[in-house]
Image (cartoon, rainbow, N blue to C red):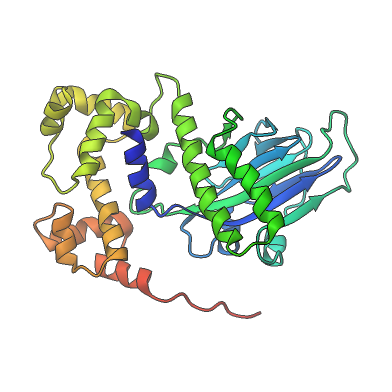
Amino acid sequence: MASDILSDVLRSVRLRGALFFFVNGHRGWAAEAPAAREIASLAMPGAEHVMEYHMVTEGQCWAAIVGENPVRLKAGDVVLFPHGDPHVLSSAPGMRAPVAAKEYLGHAGRPPFSVRLDGPMPAREGDPGETTIVCGFLGCDLRPFNPLIASLPRLLHLAARDEQGWSALFMRQAVIESHGDRPGSQAVLERMSEMMFVDAMRQYVESLPAESAGWLAGLRDRFVGRALALIHEDPAHDWSVEALGQRVGLSRSALHERFAQMIGQAPMQYLANWRMQVAATLLRETGAPVAAIAQEVGYDSEAAFARAFKRAVGKPPATWRRERLAPPREPVSA
């Protein structure tokens, strides 16, 4: 059930991978990335939200959000920065480096490409030697509603565990594609990075303590997960908390309390938010009239739907659709 809802959300928020590269570090090295929003236009033009991920294929290193405690990574580990925080990768904890991501990405050429870091910092005691890291970006929409991103920590460290899992397969295939220069390599890596992200979400859900809260924890809860599934299966239905409670086997008050405590919002608020996300997908991907889309997501009145949609995204549905369908403007040359 959880995987079905997760797939539903990932399709709706348009998860996609882009700009793939390697980092090879030797001796005392460090690489620092700015906040993802500062380089989003270079890494993933048009993406509303950008995340960066790193996978250690050889050696070991440290990763940290700037100003916070680092975590140690070894071969096979994955670290993601779901909220796009500025961060550091280094051969030893506590190291910093000049931020040159904008300059480098602007002149990097066609991915996949490599970045060699070999000084000028002196080697430090405990440096692991040669380290190779697969790096990439993932983009998605945040609005009208993306319950997944808000439920993720700022730094997500997934330790190596399954040599046959998607992450391990991705690492091996990344090396093959980067050295083979075969047609379609970039597209293959982009799709595989998306599958790696899904696999990472599965691992994260499985690792959550039993008492965890949040949207991902709610997916595996016996009652909240079933209520979420009902909403996602038929968002246009005239649901009430009482009706959902009857279907999942809880009283109205018990479901409301459990859902709000775990998800962070009441069931009817979640339903309203998800309806807006479904409507946004239909506006972007179909030519259906706004009135038809309003009915598709459970509104009898086009005017009521338009008001709700404007509250969610700040613009009426017709305006929002025109802006999304307009051809992108050509960049202005310096």
